[in-house]
Length: 145
Image (cartoon, rainbow, N blue to C red):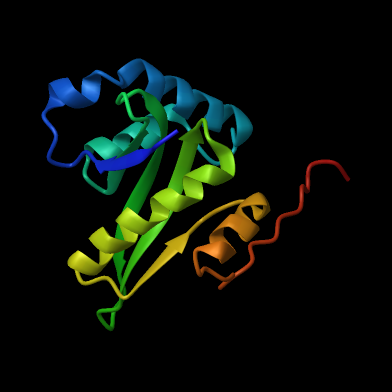
């Protein structure tokens, strides 16, 4: 199966809305997995406000497979980072190859680095694409004693 990735920023509403049901279903699955961290509303607000960019991963017949969001952050000293956030849909580790077109886009906007926020299962696929851990986020549930 051949996959392609598309930045939807300049797409007309009608083109994006074609995938509305699939995007919403993927977001809901992501929210079910991380209910304390995400909501459908917060993800939608970040995309519609322009804070985050929406990328669609489609198969060769332009059927929805997955989506990923990106956010451009600029530090006080001007260091520009493209952060990859939410990723949901179908495809698993094979989706890691879709990072290369996002890297090209990031370079085209003058970004200095790209930092995917991912669970540990993405460590090997991201390492194959040249990524290494920069920070590790630890968590402990304090509600159960």
